[in-house]
Image (cartoon, rainbow, N blue to C red):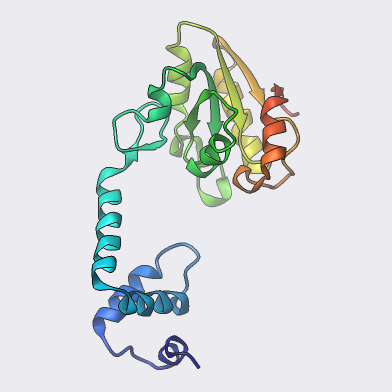
Length: 214
């Protein structure tokens, strides 16, 4: 039995500092207390300077990273590097659920438009409504554009994703906008971040005009 497994079976850890660290690590998604304890003990075995560098980098990230004022991507500046780039097509806006989907598309290296991160999808079961998402800022971006804009729905192929797409379509349909959606390459129920690159590339390149109830 490893030390972490042994300590996990006892009622109380040998140090309140270890206990406090385990409690904090266990708040991370997908990390249980047993894994948190292993990570805490691993940190204790590392060079203290390396541990301090890790702690400092996490603190600096927490203090320095914020949402982009235009698209809600993460950035250290007021506006992110994608929105600021003169080489991007600002009239083509790809709407994604969260930053992980943005990164999945961006890593392909073929999309040259900009993004809009909604911060989630409409999910009544989880108590998430349109007012909890960055919907109005998307409408404002399209409304304030002097040229015709294409908005690409790159949301999950789930009931929640379809509901969100339909809601956005109703909000945008009276504006000077062409609404498209990814081709049906991403499997139903799959998030973009888990789709393979070839499938995601074809879905973007072969996107189609969005129609309600498609």
